[in-house]
Length: 276
Image (tube, rainbow, N blue to C red; front, side, top):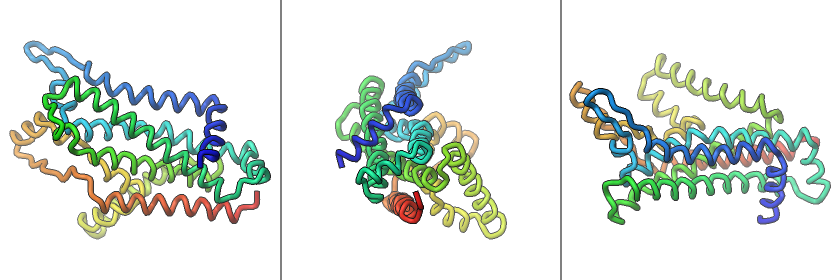
């Protein structure tokens, strides 16, 4: 396993574009900390975003994982390009000639996906912990380490999304077209949901669409803004009910894990049948 990961690391680090995107991804994650600096004064109104509770424990785990997931496209580009470069540079053929089996080849890619997701999760954990200890109104250990399931959801979400990107890179073999198909798939899921809601019912559309791959990944971490006290206060004043279910559920994790297995297994089958 270490040998396979080492092979992939050498390939990625020797690619200037991949190296730039990986570094940019983690730099952008650090920018979450800059949210604490957002403040402005409008007459008598003094607004400081950090004072709105976004860095309070345990809310910070929900907020930061949701924001960090937005930047996953940077690593998605790396993964799609990683797969496309194997075909364009003929390294996949050379790896197989050198004794790497097709199963080991796909496994090396999946291990890379898991490592990317794992490092991202640890990075967000450390960043959130630091921000929370600095800005949170609550510092009791029982509060600090509650709601950590959002980190599990973040980890699973990244593995699922990156596995999908790996599959598209294997299927299409061209990074630009693979990324275009990723966007198209998101549009198709939206159209499918809209048609079911129009022709059948909203309930059926909600229940069926939760099994769509990208929608299933999105459902792991719901938007956190409605949990803010200021938002709830405004909603109450205008008579709106925003009592949503923000929790992470085991069946939502299971759906994404099943899709992850499907993507990796299908990638392996594609490679088996393909004449290299």
